[in-house]
Image (cartoon, rainbow, N blue to C red; front, side):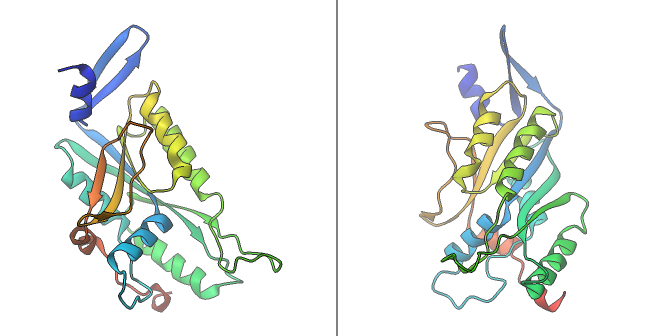
Length: 230
């Protein structure tokens, strides 16, 4: 068995590339940090698991900490969840006071556990002369990309799991996958039977993917209407 196959089969084994060869670094505990592109994951779950159903406001919502714990539980022994980082846009309190208040309430609920870190950026609202009518996220994917890469370099995690299908996040994934850092990168995505939403790949390379089913989603679904709790 070659070193490459050995490392790919054992996520707990760290590949450290040095100028004089390949060395394997073993950790008693593998520190896991989960990076969630929340709007991407929320919309994916909403479209896949609630297709054709009357959709209430909470359809597709999930508990980020529950997701992180589930990913670690399904992984190899020796993994420990250190952090769940949630990246999301934040409605403008003037343009959308209800949405802003609901988002703040949801974030407060998430952050009851110190392992959850929420990173927000203001939503961008279309100008009067633009065709778009809905607000969009701006800059949050850049922040996620920077954190994913820099935290790997600074050895803030041993395994970084990226939950997103946004191809704009391929550069940091490629960076961690290929450069001389000890961290490993993995990805996660939803699937329902044979139907799935796709996953991030690096050319012909396939970082390990955590496929989460409708049954998995049911374990971490959050039916709360945060408009009523704001």
